[in-house]
Image (cartoon, rainbow, N blue to C red):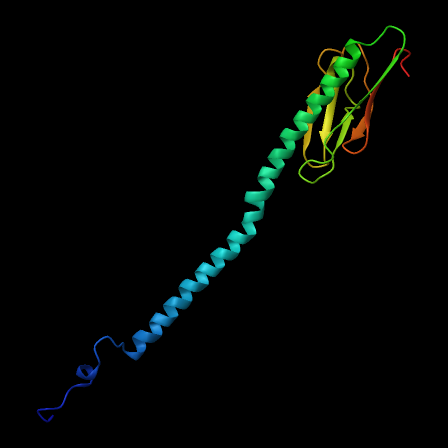
Length: 160
C-alpha cells in the first residue's frame, strides 16, 4: 500500500515533457520524412535536365532547322528565277554559326530527284526536311554546307 502523499510514476511527469519512447518515435519520424524528401530531391534533380533543358532545346533546334531550310530553299529558288540562259551567277549568304550550341549541316537529299528534291538540315540527331518549291522539276540541285564560313549558291547554265 502507498502512503497517502506519494504520486504514481505517471503523475510525476512535468507538463509539456514527453515520455522516452515518444521522443524516440518523433526522431524516427523526422528521419523518415527527411529521407523521403532527400530521395524525391535526387529524383527531381536527375529528371530536371531532360524535362526542363533537353526537351525545349530539341524543340528549338527542330524549328530553327525548318527556318534555315526554308531560307536556303528561298535563296535557291530566287537565284534560279533570275538565272540567265547562258552564264553563271554566284551568290553568298549567311547562316547561323550554330543552333543551341550545336553545329549542323545543310545538304541536298541525295535520294530525291526531280520535283521531289529536298533540303535536309540536321545535327545528326534531329532532322528537318524541306522541299525546294518551284524549281525541283526543271533544275537539278546538288551540294551541302554548314553554318560556319561563307555559304555560296552557284548557278551555271552549262550545268557544271
